[in-house]
Image (cartoon, rainbow, N blue to C red; front, side, top):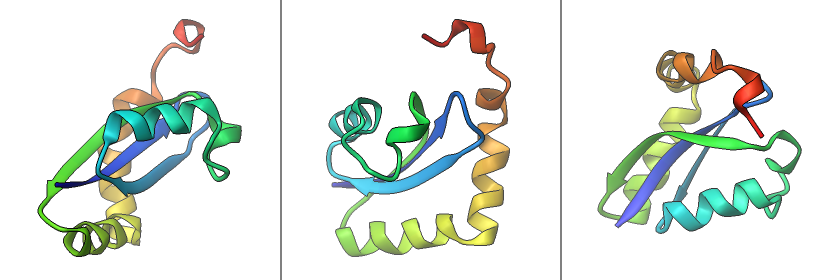
Length: 90
């Protein structure tokens, strides 16, 4: 099983879309700074995931979510995360 996921930076207005077979490990990697493209915007919170049967399907869906319409869709889903109280973030 493959997962397409979207995470949102709790301190910056950024969304990252990726794919993985192990979401928990992947989110830990993002938050520990092991991923070059996300390490400067941590902490990250998972707000979207979708299970797909193959890597090919997951890659296709990842591309859709990275498109203009996909980004707008994800921004509409992440709106509550964007309004989190920054004081609560450690």
